[in-house]
Image (tube, rainbow, N blue to C red; front, side, top):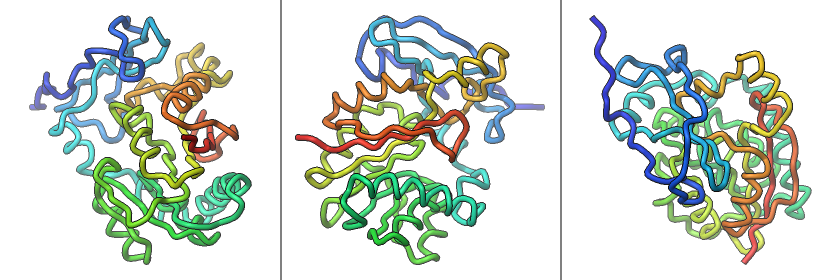
Length: 267
């Protein structure tokens, strides 16, 4: 006998998590039972809403602490250090090089939030940054420490660095957090003056996204760990609202349909 889904697994959004607007309508519903981290205690479908005021698309709620514990009780291979080390290193190198073009060289601390397979941190260290990582999966943190890189199993909100980092990367992170604006505000507080922010995530504004929607094969509608589907324009607007100026845009090699943006911290 399978256990029933917990009706309180999601905490409902009362307003748009980006603009705080109270008007939103259902945009789409998708099956998430095929996701490799799905468990029967979680709801089998994801309801996606669209904000009438700002156009942002987000789930109808975010996971409760108990649901997160269920999801984070295991990890997919690509979420742990050591996965595909050669290919991941080459892709991470291009990400670091994109930042270096705007930083004047590899200097200071690179803080990677949600470091996953650790390739980006490893490349940042290899180019000359002091590498520090945060990740909520304790197994990932233990593996990074074994490989000689400073890592902590804590949220960005409670991290207190000894000195301001020069680069903060949120590579495929903002779509995972309930309130992305507060994460960006914290990054702005921590960054050194004129520091750089690197973000990546799926881009719902791109042609490939629309094409996959047309043939009903877009995997991100059933993505269990995501709360948001950002478009390029909405992301740029959010960055500017939180004190960052986008200075570089590119298509990501790391994940399907993803974009990469480098933004500079402004006062």
